[in-house]
Length: 477
Ligand code: UN1
Image (cartoon, rainbow, N blue to C red; front, side, top):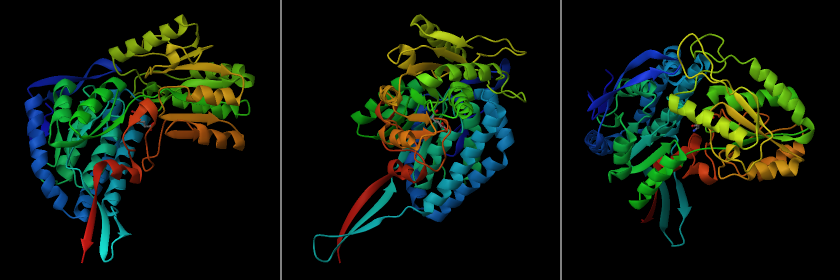
């Protein structure tokens, strides 16, 4: 039984849940505690008290704690990567890479803890000093999704702790294994004051709701669906809590006539289908210029046929299973809808049988679609991409920007002029030239515009904006 970590102790939940392997639904990974609202409250109260002590520790002390956590994560990359792939379904190399990213995030924020500077401004009044400093927010509530079971928790927990906040962490129901393993490392290797870090696994309707409504939780950071994110955001707004939301994407990848075809296909295959297409940064709208359209579609279908969809832990698997039955149903719903709307399913989209019972779906490509169709408006969150043919670069840019989302965008081109122009005109928070729309660096700001994101950026030096509060002090000496 994997327990919750509340107020410095491992405690049982009010119920438990089973963690199943999407590559083999007969494989039970473990049993995990599930808390109710009262237990979430206990964690929040403990965090509220502990935060005062944690904030008084020196920056070096906090830095060392994060450094130890990062070291242990990195040294256990293979074991933790296998656990991650087993519970989420991304391939083993993808799982190990994600664990490495989580470890490096802790190392990065170990440095950031020491770099939290301030400013001194000249005053308009004689003899007065104006100082600008940053202080912790207090208790931060962290709600994470199932598609990055260790990297997203890491990039929220590490900056929260680095800058002196206490944490109550609620991971996604589908992937408690990596969250629990990460929490066990933080709890032990971090040597944090009791209550500084709390793991509260349990339903969003109880644990998430308590985090969003508790007056002691000063800031909530959320990554997940648009619907839940907006609800969390509204609840936080009502009581004046700080909130950061990372939600969906409908990310365009433009392929121009002058693109290197081989490279464009690799970029599209990676962006659309790796991690089983379950990334909010994934490419789902391939906007292809007329002259290269047919050759591109042909090359994509060919490359897709060579991709091996199988058990996430098998050597040689390119694409693991979809995470759950619900997600598989959603993917298939959108494939059917895309064809009903007039698209042509030219590759994939089939349920596959493998040696073990799992949610196997071959990557799907739907051509001849229009940007106004549902398949190009709503996030699918699976290995499903559609192709929109455009007449020229201008139409490509307009189509790319014509979306309610704005997380990531990409262009494949050998033209400096078009690459430069697209970087300027894209209405997404992240723009990629000849690299996939998904797969970002851990030390660079991450986030989107429009319906994709709300609040300040995550990661890199920009993370301090969310995890600290600015104080302006005036002194007449
Ligand atoms: C990446 O593309 O490297 O949930 C990260 C997601 C994003 C993270 C993507 N928040 O897919």
